[in-house]
Image (tube, rainbow, N blue to C red; front, top):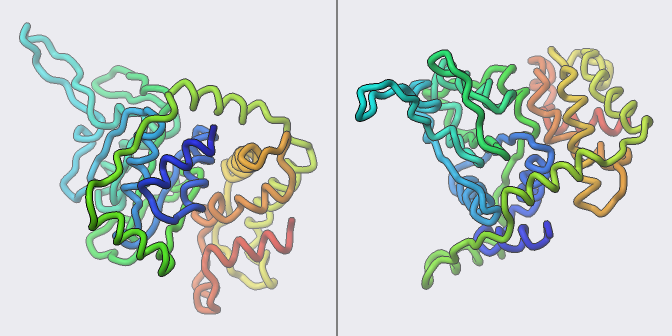
Length: 306
């Protein structure tokens, strides 16, 4: 079933197989993902194709410096009977593309926090439930940082995965150019429904987790709270919190499910450690000066503690 969804997405998105699988895993965990990559790597196309292939309602918000919270959540308006009614904003979708999320001020970024955590929105003193399933898939350009607003740690922690998209291979780029410059474009067909997602999310949630796997995930996260966790040097300023332990176990279950396992093991924890943990660590200046980054640091932690 998942192979069918993946195959339909790949009719539109060339390459990026790891990113596609990670986004599917995030959604199987009922989680959100932050996609990071330079322009032109199909971040938006991937999200839109996934929503269409899943049969889910798609919403897109282009984050800009002048965007207000009401532009995201919605606002009250007078109807024909001159009564105030809540007009829902673009947030009320099943798959929300938060495009270039770091280009809007923190006040507007924070409008997403309740939605991402509680799956609800409080506006004008009333709480409105979001549709099920609900996913936020945000994009961010890592190169051009002028006029941007870095996401606060509290918001980064709400993303299950940080997914880094790389450049395509030569063969993939040739296929991209041929596909997009000759003839009609492929229209993604819906091969799933919202109920399919809800059923699969429940199947993943019901997977048993051996106590040793939970211990391994918690041990890995707790190791990040020691500044001397890597090479006995002060490379970590702030470690990951308990939400990282939860995310590791959830993501390991999704990884095991995708690979046909009946329960996750330590290899599944190791496989998802980088996208789960890299955005939850704050590195010191010495780490950067010594040539480390968030990815290599997590890889070193996995090698040492798993």
